[in-house]
Length: 554
Image (cartoon, rainbow, N blue to C red; front, side, top):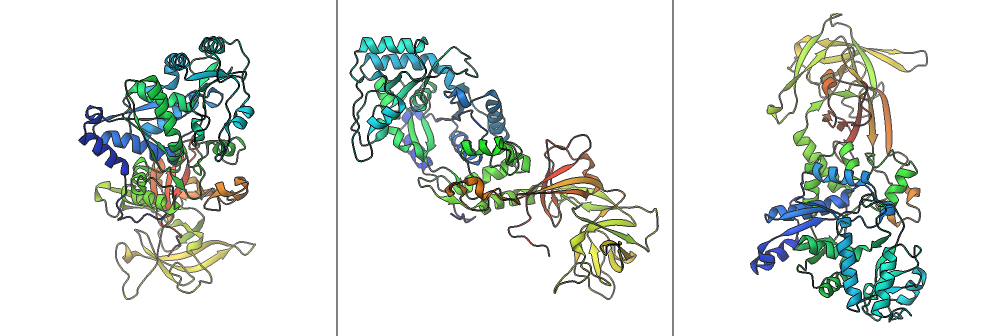
């Protein structure tokens, strides 16, 4: 799917809420929630849900809760809880209330007892494999479990025993008693509780009985007074179960579940299992590796919250799954950074130039604007000296046609400084270019040369004043648009997704760059000072995005 920038993003959810408000449903209140499971770091797909849930609440002067669905303790941890809170706030949102599904364990248990007493739930001894076999298929109805007609008294005693730890893991489950012939397989006596002796990151070892997501989620929504429970399309077939549980329990609040298409972005994966595999097998440096589609990775790469929010708004909210081109996200990032970050000069592969007619030991302090369209960004001082550094590929001994940079005997303008001419090439013993000897025209500072036209402009830094830096050139992590379609997604990892350049030089004004400082390195791309590895005087810059798609230097 390609998004036209002038296209108005669709959002059918607004139409539903507008109608609800017109009919004064929920007394005109709008309460949403963002309910992640703390089993990994949030990714770009979660960003869409965050923007939708928090943004919808803000648009209608409502509230949005953050609730952790922590019912699967094997994979959950406080590390993920903290990272999720950090990411939500970094994106620019603040929850009204903070909750955990584990807050409701006692209430959930009591509700389950109520279902048993009403003959709507039973304890089953079938194994998971047997339950799957009894469930039937899309074309064949399921079969009833031999335990389906246990007495209410026996079910209550067994369920209490499950809570008390009297039985082994997997020995029993609690199932809803609905309809084993339902055309919706989710309604064929789904599991509500299972026994798991696993330490919980909040409740410790208080429980060995944990509720299933489909049972927990709807009740948690009802307890919190959620009016619109927004979730992705894979839960559409689960909505009848969501409604069944709340109807049978006669909860005072019955939220409306509304499904929307999840974000499917080319050249990425958003499966937490696969993302975890990338991390644990060290294909990336961690959850916050700038190549990862996690919010932490995007942040470390230098992407701003505004760019992510803009992207989520542009792609809109639809009822149909579709693929979003990576270029849509990259263009949102470029537009935001182009407008809002200062310029600087950095030479990634330095070539030394000695300006032979410039006074030895002299330093000029040139003033350059920090942004060509934003005078309020002010100016910076850039030192100019006899010895400077330019990009190695900004000089060609044997230039190709239409080459506009420096050539033997040719002239080029140094950005914000003088016109120089290459007079001599100095090579080392291996025949490689070691430095260039040039002369400058003193009359060309801020002026065109007399009687001749100079077309090329290149960037540079003063050799004695420039700062050493490491620059990491990040690219897409995968070589195909949909790596999830591959039999082995690791087989399509991009071997060139990271190029590390050492010995780079950046202008002196970057000496005071702080964590997450973002810049446009002129003629090169957008970069961010790495928050993790820029320590002890070390400067590491991550490339956020190139200047333009399929970019080539002039």
